[in-house]
Image 1 (spheres, rainbow, N blue to C red):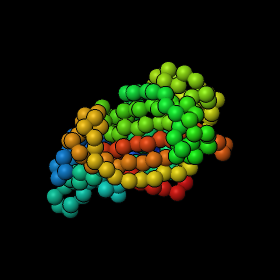
Image 2: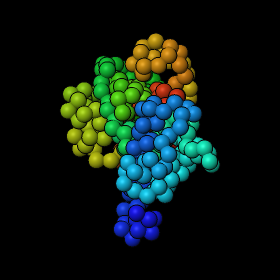
Image 3: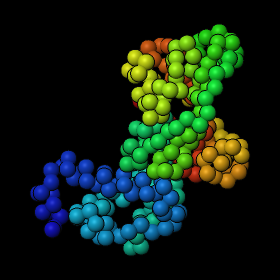
Length: 248
């Protein structure tokens, strides 16, 4: 089938959907570690046969991945994995699942620890509550494509979110769904502080990385209708995630 034939067979939206789907699936493979840095990806002609499309559609997908920094297209040689971490967007609306859905990655989150603590002065100021107020301290392990990406610790007021661990489990680890279960339909990220540090032994074990591997950290405040909801402290595997700050 010629390129013109394909153009006639598909409208613009269908073509866009096809190359984006191919790009998302390849991005998922890259993030799961199917290709090491410098590995050659399949030739466009081979993928075109696999997907039943013209090679130009595959090349468009590869160009998109190159724009993201995930592959390097070398004229006359092929397309190669760069080993660049997956871009993880940070803006007013942040969702672990939505971030990874853009790359056709299935996200999973599970509780690894939960406790009740009293608010320190710093947490109290950020959440707008009195020092000593009981808080949930919920620790989550977050994966994509069955690969550990991050650990997140969530601090929320106990009285506002009764039975929180059970609700999170019922909502498959999604805080967006959990907040909706409490009648909170939308929330926004008010601020994020980004830093880097070395992993502890426990973090290295949970994230399946080397002891004292470099982690990217983000400390964020989420709110709804002007009221603080939670503080989230997240540690990301620096070899798999690149933090991308965006203006929404």
